[in-house]
Amino acid sequence: MAATGRYITQADVERRLTAALVRQVYDDDADGTLEAGEESALTDIILDGEELVESTIRKTYGPAGFDWLRTVGTLAPRSIKRRCLDAVRILIAERHPGYIRIDTEQAWKRFYADLASLRSREIEMAVAGGASPEPAVNEGADVYSGDPDDTTLKAKVFLDSTGIFLLF
Image (cartoon, rainbow, N blue to C red; front, side):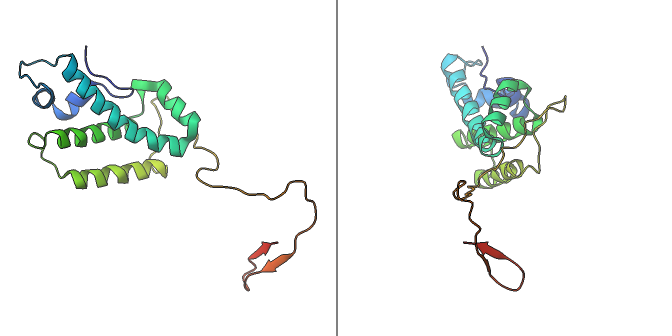
């Protein structure tokens, strides 16, 4: 049985990093195969990487987008899979820095910049058929409308000569 997450699998990780490298990092007894405990450690890293991406999806697309992403699973958009694999690569590099020589601090900065692009929707989530979730309405803002039962007119107070005013 291979390690798997919600969106990426051990095969995806091996395509990104090579199977030999994954075995070097996770085959702790050096017998050439990953046993259950070793696969479990790889699965944990995959799920950790996916969780970093999911937190952005929850913030941007709300519960509906998050549910949509969980529904598509391993058919997730490339933009999501790529970011999950980026996170896994960095987490693996931190586990065994001798096998993957990258500047993890810079790699995390690039990773979070990519997530910011996903959050600002410069990069869209869409599967091959073009379906994608709608961003959450009123994302990240609090709206106050006052007392909906109060029908009295409010006085306008101008702040400056530009016509900007407040209602009191």
